[in-house]
Image 1: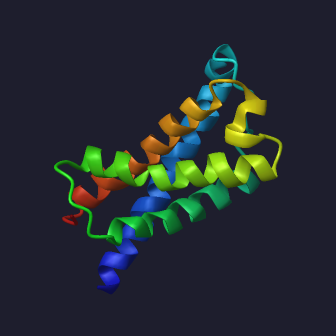
Image 2: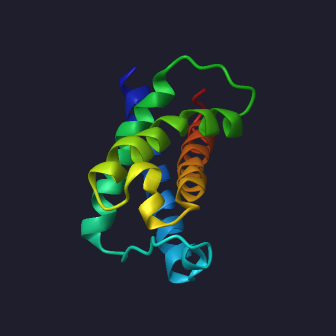
Length: 132
């Protein structure tokens, strides 16, 4: 059981790293700006570290007995939880406003996409590690 808990945390942290690199990369390439989304964070340890840790904590969702036909589907399904927290709690408490609309009208779609990257990465890592 302890191995499984460790693997899920690592998978979530890996997903958090990949998610963060996507967010940063899209910002660097100007793709977020082209979509009208004001989301271009700097790649610093202060920005990256909490995202990796939170990704690991969200990884514990993979301990839930959720049946999915593929890692892709499971990753997408579990990514809904951090997406809702980001859109309904984090953004409204910060500079993003409800659903992040103050950052741009397509912000919710970008958050859904970036969090799906987290979920898919974590799910595929767990599949490769022999976890279901």
